[in-house]
Amino acid sequence: MSDWIKVCNTNEISDNQIFPFDHEGNKIMLVKKDGSIFALDRICTHAEADLSTGILSESGITCPLHLSVFNLENGTPQNPPAEKSLKTYNLKIEENEIYLEAL
Image (cartoon, rainbow, N blue to C red; front, top):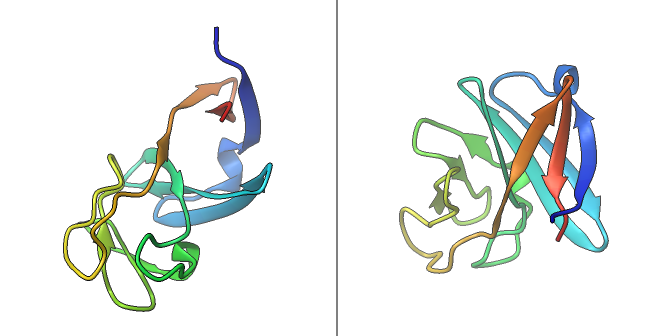
């Protein structure tokens, strides 16, 4: 059975917004895009830029440093220079609270 960690309330993240947070030394972000919420590592796998300062688009989230785009659903890079996927996390929403599956 998994443990779940409360991240925030659903009203704390708007559509097309990035919500960065840290948990036990891990830099993670929630991204709300078109009504769906995703949880991913927020440090680019190419050059360690903070993706929470990146740009959201239809394709995903664009790294502010070298413009690699990462898919929000599975963390895969869509273009170079990044080649390694971001880690993604399971989420659940209960009574307007967003929970992340324990790491």
